[in-house]
Image (cartoon, rainbow, N blue to C red; front, side):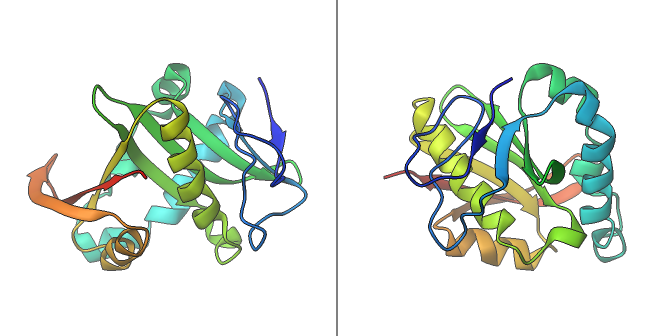
Amino acid sequence: MTACRASPENSPATTCWAKFSPASALESEVIRLAASDDIPVIERIVAEAYFPYIARIGATPGPMRDDYVARVAQGVVHVLQEDDAIQAVLVLVPEQDCLLLDNIAVSPAAQGRGYGRVLMHYAETFARQKGYSVIRLYTQEKMTENIAIYLRYGYVETHRAQEAGLHRVFMKKRLG
């Protein structure tokens, strides 16, 4: 497993990303593919990050239903570590015509440190590296703050649909 330190001078690698904006670069930040030993921490971060939405949407959010044992085995789960502690999770799923940003979750204890921004930029770099010109995602329609964030990052709404009992907003971004 390869890991890279956050450094504007480095170029992207398969399992890590190192092109951070100066405002978000931290010396001890690492993004790498998740390993099976990471699964309990991944599940905890996802549960803690999405738990507040249960009451709002009236259902368990999709990421809390996911099988992270299978996802890690598929090699689609990335984790952001700082000082050897996992702080955030990113699930990127290759599809035929685009990259699916399936989940991004930051530990509530680590929110406000720019990790979400770092992972959003990482997803774009990863997509370009894999030859994709489009990233797509979906979010629950009542997670309005997430929709606003994605719009600020240049995503556009493509449609809304009910899927797996959840009312979702589908979005995509063409990469320049």
